[in-house]
Length: 388
Image 1: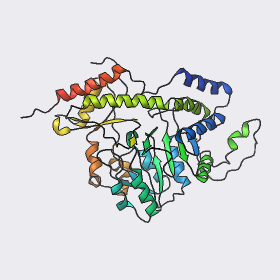
Image 2 (image 1 turned 120 degrees about the vertical axis):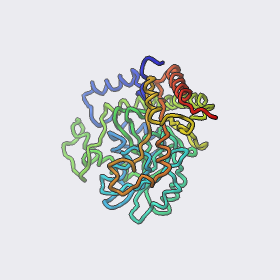
Image 3 (image 1 turned 90 degrees about the vertical axis):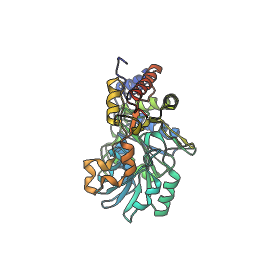
Image 4 (image 1 turned 180 degrees about the vertical axis):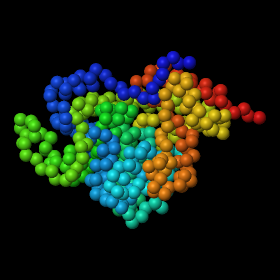
């Protein structure tokens, strides 16, 4: 058995990131400034979009995006039930209602065929979430948005660098939100980014991320700045630091390298598990570039004598860190007030009981990958149902 615990994920930080952060610390300017502007410019170029606005979390990105499109109390926003709570909780900040939609059984993404029946006169927007880094069926979602005059805000926390039919995620919809949490494809410690081709939305987000103060106010303490500022709207404290942005600039340079390493691990996993009837490896759409932020397997529980939860326990006993993405939101106490019933989302219920996310990140060694594979195979062998 592996002696040292293998974490589910670890950030890939080198001397270049440390040096860049140290340079900012020594400069004396730590908060939002020129380094953040450079990060935004570099990110916009990388994605291929006109505007990128940095914030201090992916949740902040989603909140500001909904503010930019003018979400109001009493309106509704369609979100998948199989997602992290941030996707839905930001809707409630406005006094609006998150309307849950079931997922597809193969990709775990929101099922476009089940969206239209949830659209009402109150619906303002749709938030597709690209689970694990595989893009949603954006053509169908875009058609619905056009038909009903809805806005699309993509939750791309997992989707860097993902593509949909040759188009980079971050360039397709009205607004796209990325996360730079330590577990994400690139990290700034805590952080996020909003991308859009709409100048008015970008300016609104830039202002609202710092108390609603006129957008040049960050510069008021520099030699060339002005002490005078205006509070244009009551905003929030969502601006990033130059410390975080310095880390982001260096991480972005290695984004493609991180992706290639994750893709290689995914291919090794898939080949290793191909012959196991107890394991379903991830389905990938042929027209997408999967970012492989997550490698989610599905257990064929009818072939095993243990549950998914017990499978997780066995993995951890053998020093392999794993996770589950996600517990469906309709099962969470916070959303019971909206009247959702357990059986309203049969597919999400079904896949939730079977899914397990294996470690997949650039710092994993060849031996780490072999250990993870060995443990999965060992558990399957030990708890495989005997066939008559």
